[in-house]
Image (cartoon, rainbow, N blue to C red; front, side):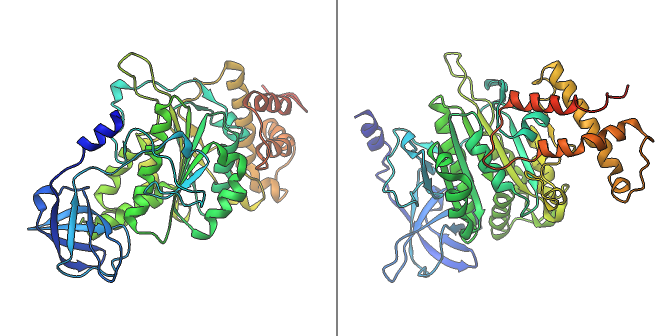
Length: 449
């Protein structure tokens, strides 16, 4: 009854309308009712030929006209068409029954399993991040089940990491391994700008039935409008925040932040923003921290308790292998570490193709014990020595005995490569990973002084 009363009180008896003045590319110019519009406000545009009303969002103003961008195709929109202005902010009402379901950017089911139960409280899609002084610190380390990450980029609960890679090097498979194997209560997967052909493939084969059981999957394919793709990222974070507030430890996986930035670039350019580096508009770089900072340690409640954390991994597409391109550089500065996936490693058949020497977790070494730090140092020393001399070793130009450290690296390289190689269905717990690494490093010749 309380929810019903609050819903009735939220109803605005005043209906404000405007008119379509012009349609220009991706933008619809509106006149009338501007006093009730603000950037980010929603509206519905009437269409002829029996078509449903077209949802839209205000993205800017130009003189006496408001600039609206639609969430769908503009077919049927004519000059003078009615525009109904919606005064409430965009929100969603998730519930625990959403686990195991697939939804679109509007929170509507797209898996053919029937309607979704509505939760009791609305969660704004564009909620602000928790205040820095009123949120907890990262917690204990999280067991991800992936050896290369657990050992070399140990992740804590509430940490945010970026997975930087080009296309086709195994990002989706790595995300599915984390969704199935990480020790958490719930998973939220956001597929932003995904290829339509790959959605079912990812959900049914890569993620699998076991992974889907504890997950909410939010999908916006590459053919959908820029507003829809951007909103799918906001929907992903809103679902994660709801599960966090239910005291569930959440793992949020988003693929990819780059496509979110591209959608924001389309919106900004259409609204008249000046392009900056590589055509990205200023709002691209202002929206990134607003999205990424919503993940992390939970806020501290008024009673002094701390909400559950949202541990997040965001994939970043590096254009042509350039890890210093604008979006990758901006994201790397916001997050708490980065995982680098290398195409050359994938080409030689080692998956996941993680370059552990270029990957960093900013919670290390504090989250490792002293013996684990020593194992990490010894393993990195061997991998680095082999990497530095790899070309000479392959052509036979290195002479055995010239450097004891390189000799040891050559001897241990097959075992270390096998340790870093992991099949998608192979889960290795964190403690076991360090035990296996210790056995590898202790074999063969004695470590040089």
